[in-house]
Length: 313
Figure 1 (cartoon, rainbow, N blue to C red):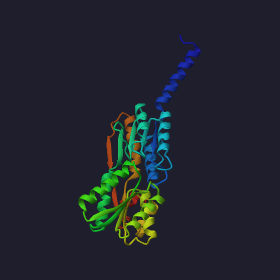
Figure 2: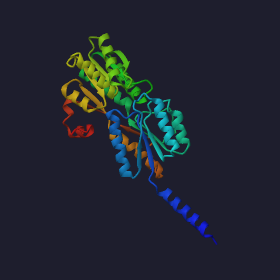
Figure 3: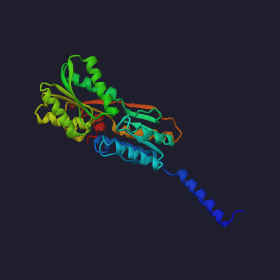
Figure 4: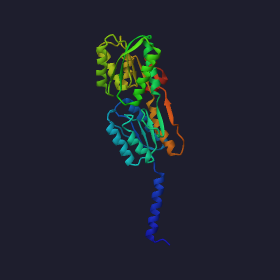
């Protein structure tokens, strides 16, 4: 027969175990950064998933996409907190491998979204088909240039797999499908609008007869738009950018940007959380989920489906 003290201890243990088993799951969502509108939209999607799936979303990211050390710290902190799952967009395909592997080895399911890692044992991969998006960017620019001319490429940052795939897809299509279009200059914008503007300025100075430019990310597109507009070249240099923001949408309306290749960041954020929750609930989420990018031109901005995608009021 149990003593009163032993009975109380046993009761407390049972209650604690029951509460632990029924507590809300905590899903850490770690973006490349938090400053650009793209990541704000990803957060909206992730938080909607949290509400609909009854889980807590812990959103935490570095201020800059090039701050790999900070992203590593965040992953390690989430593992130390024993979160139930992690969704991460890696800033650098190799730098984050060790930390993410530690999370997986500790039993935490990890979904990789937007930008990949050099690992295979993740839970799910949720991203735009970035190589195909880069191909779409090349075909869109080539169509506007009528298949000939000189173009520049303002890239994002070294080691960012998503943007590297876009840039590779862009080069591939230009080389294979449009032999009369020549890429005459390539520079990194380092995930910064001011540095991207400087990169675009360098290309424009070195190649004053250039006909078009492709920017592989939001900050790169913002920088290119500023460089082209400041030189009064909006009517001469055709700009195809990637992703969207209020400023880029306005630039598209005014003619400083000629087309935007856009993703669906809200869906990406939702599915990143959803695939982790599916795993935690004993379901089998897809190993890979490819989301398609869309080319948006000026005349498309009043279409209902585009207004929804771009969150235009």
